[in-house]
Amino acid sequence: MGAITDENSRDLPINLDFLEPGKIYEAILYKDAPTADWQTNPEVYVMGKKTVTATTSLTVHLAKGGGCVIQFV
Image (cartoon, rainbow, N blue to C red; front, top):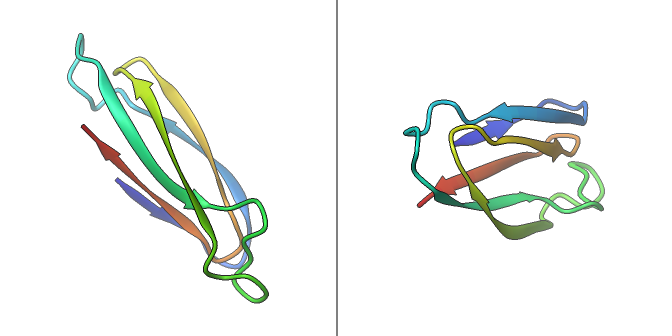
């Protein structure tokens, strides 16, 4: 799954109800670092992992001109 934004930063709520019910997944997140900014610091990101299910709801912060990628395993 991927998401991008324009020159405005935002917090993106993500509902995971598209995942198969009753299964447990590991979400591997690649997202903007807290200091990311498309003009002043465009290439910084952080990686993290989280256990999720179809009932999990995530919120990802997208920096100005930033984005995220989430892999579900």
